[in-house]
Image (cartoon, rainbow, N blue to C red; front, side):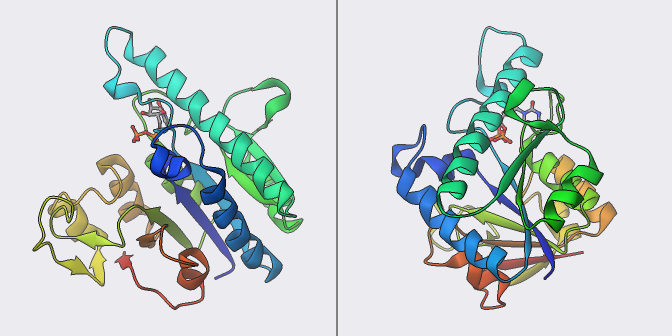
Length: 231
Ligand code: UDP
């Protein structure tokens, strides 16, 4: 793999606390990403916002505004993780689809590619910049734009199951499944908008558990224990 896009959910950053940041969790991620960068692999990152806010679950306020808060939550997450990455010895840059003053630079493909060439980790914050979308969609969109070889989907569970393993002890895990089947069976690996984009643009995904020791590095090195979503 030459270039990958790693998606972390907001909750993943919070560890057991469920909200805010769990530094130990983020440091573990940082060390793994550093070992990829040291080997010359280019890494882009998208982070969700669920550890702070979700537009669709907020009540009483306009959805567009609720989603704007969600997008800003993803910017906060990227600033935090980017700083932990820097403290771990990496160079980073945050790109957003809207102006955030001095906090980030405006996303363009050319900019992203320039930073990858300089061995920087590039954070794609702010989702796609529009309400009614998610960071799943942003993940697929940016992965397509930067021509990533794979999307690395770090989850709380260790792959794709035929039903929710938290509620069904007999749920069966797939080692490999096509994106068409994910869509047909509504398996919600990523949301439907993102799944369709993934299928149309033929970008494969590797789904694995963030909590498993060294799982990001193992996934990239082919020592993979999760589910491969083929296109
Ligand atoms: N969001 C948005 N547009 C985007 C990306 C995110 O409006 O392109 C908002 C939306 O409110 C979402 C929140 O940011 O709920 C956090 O993003 P994430 O993808 O983590 O949301 P989730 O799928 O967990 O709701």
